[in-house]
Image 1 (spheres, rainbow, N blue to C red):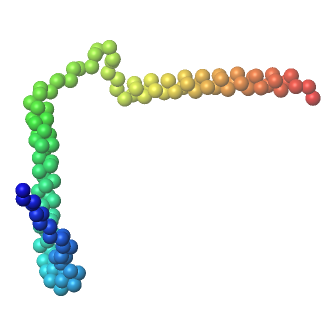
Image 2 (cartoon, rainbow, N blue to C red):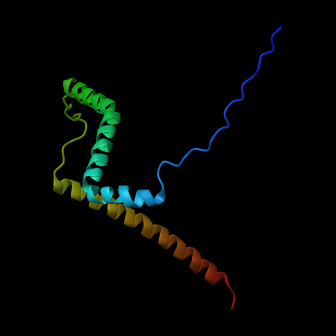
Image 3 (cartoon, rainbow, N blue to C red):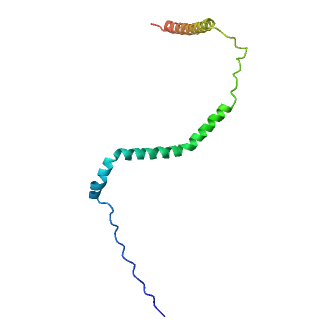
Length: 127
């Protein structure tokens, strides 16, 4: 029988660097500096296009929602129930003044009661 002879695989060679820093500085950087505005506008255009692609479905949904909202009938506001009488400014002002004077009177009564209690306590204290 024949023995198979195995061939040795070639030894892996380290990758050769494509660009050296000196080469980048000499060849690429002047090009970049000369065409900086064009590169910036190209990148901006690409970014805007990609953003619009991602926003397109959301914009379509928003347009559909607006169309549905416009197509829906707007309910007519019902007039207020007759239970609440319509007041003019003077009547409202009078009611507010009456309510505030009532609150002030209640507070005055509470203060008078406290003063009476304090007077009785002070009267009970023997010198």
